[in-house]
Length: 467
Ligand SMILES: O=C[C@H](O)[C@H](O)COP(=O)(O)O
Ligand SMILES: C=C(OP(=O)(O)O)C(=O)O
Ligand SMILES: [Mn+2]
Image 1 (cartoon, helix red, strand yellow):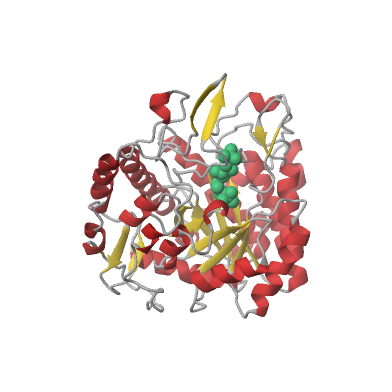
Image 2 (cartoon, rainbow, N blue to C red):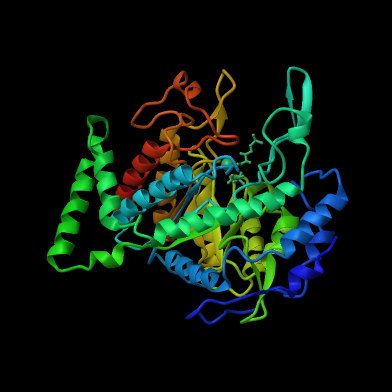
């Protein structure tokens, strides 16, 4: 496999960047992961085709700039200390077909609306991050799927294979990695345009939120929206410069699952001579790939990006500490985020021992709550779903556990879409079993729809006020 080009390309730094922190474990071992256990990788049928796709990717420009990545690390350090709050949201699996202007706009709009409500609730800056512009690869519970006696490879995300249940679509095609790169590039370009071009204007975002609370089903949230109204009127009366609030910052993130893709997009920063994974600002390691001696942890231990790790209910304090030692040996502020996904029924006993052990070790990672992945189940009719009430309950349990441990509940990680899909049960529209069939569009996990996302933001804002 051709790897040399990736290390020769340079990443320009941004102006006014932070002073770079300590060097990662070994800047020289970016290929060490190749000799380690590599779980959840596609069975690419043609090694030559993979090699050409990787060579093509290795020559393409970075999607993000190292200076932006450093800025994000600084923001996450603030969140870890309780001086900011992280909102990370987007699809379970982005698709090439859905990378349209309208769909991206609706997703960005949903995140912006949630962020305004959370900003008010927390009285803190909210760091906005999309599970967007690169979330094209999925780890799966099973390698294959059987329908009517026919068994084919499981769908592993648009970066790997197609969703259609045919042999041709399900065969992994490495050219999809290249398409994933280009789709991420155009998505990110539009996100940057939306967030800097006036679409994120605070006054407009607040108007959208007033629209949300404007009917009887959502009137429970009208009080909080009214408070935000009055806060804005107060700001205006004080002469606040609302024009300065027409643009905002939004960062990109995805699960760093496909090692060949992430390695091809790992480049040496020209300012610091250190490696950055320039496929996104923030990368996380999933629950299925977080083996401390595995390939995923090794590769991400060597890049300068802030990194996350999902921690499910079976995580032991020793696991969490070993991951922290490997991924953040220097205790660098903002470097490590633990994304807990315990399930509503387990968070209250599973999280406190981890919080205590990590704090006792003198560590202050950013702790955020993924209330989605521990609450997935399949209905009697075979539909993969979640209950809105359980999602909310896990967030509540997250705040409770942190309050008890004296640690900082620093953010939320949500699978959502800006569309009116019917994938999660409950919420203001009270989606029931029968309604699930009307607009179930996800290719992997069920997402909160636009209304459910806003409702969660209003409920979490209330919890944040009590933080
Ligand atoms: O998004 C997370 C995982 O990829 C997903 O939950 C796995 O789903 P599966 O159990 O249907 O494979
Ligand atoms: C695969 C995912 O989650 P987890 O690794 O927590 O199961 C995901 O975030 O889509
Ligand atoms: Mn998912």
